[in-house]
Amino acid sequence: MVIRLLAVGRRMPAWVTTAFGDYARRLPRECRLELVEIAPGARSANKNNDIARAVADEDKRMCAAIGADMHAIALTVDGKSWSTEQLAESMREWLADGRDRALLVGGPDGLGANSLARASQRWSLSALTLPHPLVRVVLAEQLYRAHSILTGHPYHRG
Image 1 (spheres, rainbow, N blue to C red):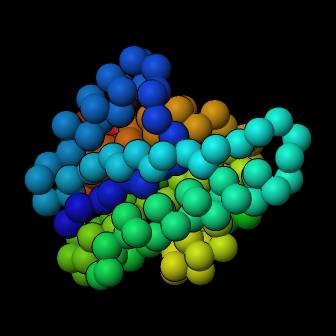
Image 2 (cartoon, one colour):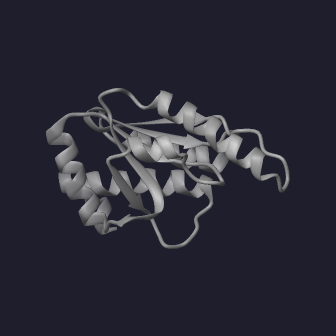
């Protein structure tokens, strides 16, 4: 199974790339984590038309990056909150199911309507607003932590 993190945004700080890569490398091949960066749409200051057009552009690229057979999960503020243990249980189900997963992270103005419609689940990492670079790191770390629970690895207890 591949977990593909589809995230709007490019040119992340080095600490984000390093931390994400560290956790992604720790996951085994049967639970591989990949990052696909989606180019952000062009925005101008305070122009609602530009924002709508930017979100539509991101939405089009996001939907194109979701594989036809992938189970898509949108990360949204209004999504369901999961504990680490609940994520581990979900990961157990994902591994048993065998289908690849796509985790969708929108840009500064959120996910577009088509991306939201394509997702069969909505997940909220926090009621707090997290910076997009940090979301990548938190997701990678939590996926690794959930996998460590499933395999009895001591990382989770540390």
